[in-house]
Length: 343
Image (cartoon, rainbow, N blue to C red):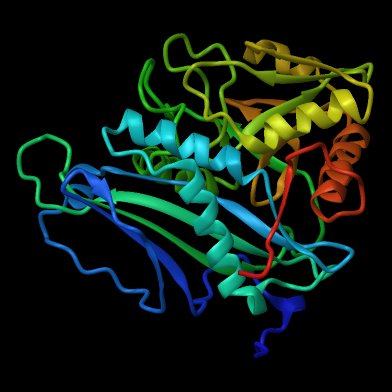
């Protein structure tokens, strides 16, 4: 079977693929799970996810490497993070081994939708969980769905990677000791008004500060920050208990230290310190790194020396090295690449 998709013009949106994975939790256990062609979900109007937002999700990609293999990138870490999200939301964790099996099965079943090497496109995978049984009192549901679907997506930057402009937000992304450290759907719902408002004012994203003192940098609505010092020798990432632990950030920090010989610091970063950095980027699954050229802080502008024309030199090295590992052009650390083999 071949699919009729123009990979060169594919955008970053949803395209229905033939198969998805579904497992149901009932009577205290997960069933065996299955692949299905049915993309519709039927549940009660009183489902826990609809009443009290009891849901969490993940995001990862499958790639075609330079030598023609289909692989995923560190899916074990997505499995681990989803377990932590489930625990925090009082949902039954989906076992890591079954998570990896679901990823493998969905990618293999939809293998014709994995874009070819060099196209700039990938197969995006969305595992998610939610409470499906009726809940009217404020308490966890008794039944759950674990589902995983796939959709081919084009490159995040259609016109090439250009630095973006962001603002320091007046909104808070997460509460102290709240759910900012897990991938809960409710975190993203809370960020929607802030991002729409930022776009209306001409900004690409929000920089959220710590909600307790509003003096330390946290993250954006969907990505972690990464900074480069003026001497280009050190990578700095903000540290906070309410920041989502990005798998991309974790991987970039390893690349910085082990592949590029840079120093890495994971520590609290004050807003007043940001102007001292040479480069700034937002890191996440979708774009790997989105370079930031300018930050607007209530009438003041922070313009990074790397400028608004192109990605900074060190950020570009990080981007090229990590994407090279993902695409099979650069040898990967043990365990980072999982090959999808014949089922």
